[in-house]
Amino acid sequence: MAGHSPRTPAWPPRSAPRLFVDTPLAEGVAVAIEGPQAHYLTRVMRVGEGDAVILCDDVTGEWAARVTEAGKRNCSLETVECLRSREEVPDFWLCPALLKKDRFDMVLEKATELGVAVIQPVITRRCVADKLNMERARTIVTEAAEQCARTALPQVREPVKLGQFLRDFPEDRLIYFADELGGDPASAAFAQHLPPAALLTGPEGGFDDEERALIRDHVQSRAITLGPRILRGETAAIAATAVWMAQAGDWS
Image 1 (cartoon, rainbow, N blue to C red):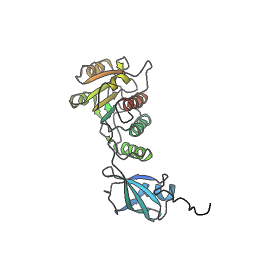
Image 2: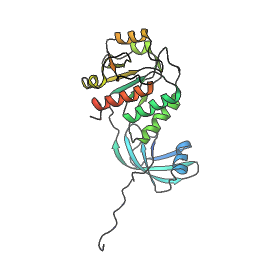
Image 3: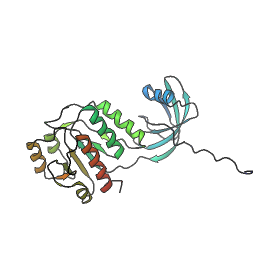
Image 4: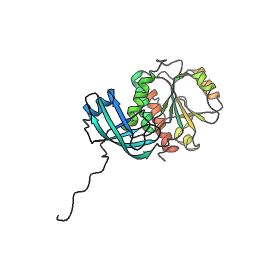
């Protein structure tokens, strides 16, 4: 129709790739991208000079940046404007017993998407794994944060044995203990208390009787049930976190 000009496309576009970087961000900062991240931008996403990329530094927030140079092995960008400040996620710790690698990878990924602040792996007697590749774990949560547009990375801590976890647990935080033998219904229990909170879930074989007694005897422990069925470790961690976010977190 005469007299009408095409609408100017939004910038940056919603389809712009997202990356976390170690460089502290501010307006007009030059950012050099190398290695796998450069390959992702130039080879997978095929960005070129002038294209938009969304950058996060886990400190200041989310920034729109413009590509100033795109090479085969590196990519240079310049920040243009701050789109969002770093978000405040709920003060919720997920404390899952270590699982087999692929299943624990899922826990790391989904906990990040759900908004968990801290992931504290716990080693119990029936754990099939007793080590966690921390570099790999941090890569998984970073990629998950990029995918879900999260601006605050979860803190992934080194695994600790159950006894140490309970001894060192802070006094200002409840431990919701997902006990397959029963407890208060999770949804109702979560709704009764505000953060800070933590959720402790078990390994493939569950907690043994001595561990269960130790957890239940802890002054800050609250046993909860996740329903009538016995859930896999990764299912329990992810499902209970989602219920907590709905009842006491930022879904409500």
